[in-house]
Image (cartoon, rainbow, N blue to C red; front, side):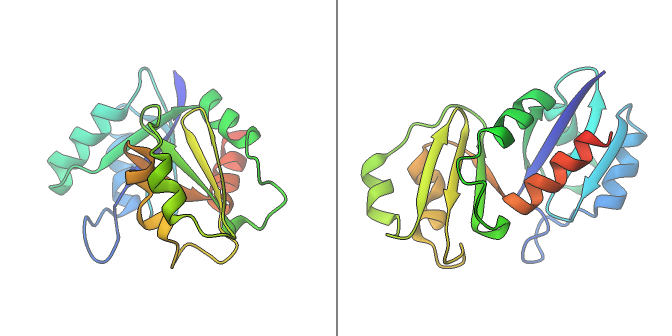
Length: 172
């Protein structure tokens, strides 16, 4: 069994794609996933499975909840590498965001430079786009345009969430 970090995109937002984590946890446990742990309602799951669970989880959610969210999976090593590569560890967790990409980003630097604020910093390492947004992400034009800038599907988590998942992984 391998350990995976599963990140669901676009669930439980604005009353759409409702997916209670407690129900999902039971569903996964009854479907041969082991050591299933979830963190908050935004779709963060750590589990053990014999192969990459991305397609199986997507199908389970679709057949049981009636929608098919974007699912991104990371191996334990990939996740730990993303954490250790964080170029902004000195900043407060709510101002640092990791955008995990399904595939290698194809940065649109012209678009990126047109939307990034003077106060924002960003770094791309492997398939993770790191952002330090000291004024928050609520009004960030970069965040609103993130996938246009990256050229691929991505899902974001702030450093606080990443740190919590990292702690959960270490305590497994």
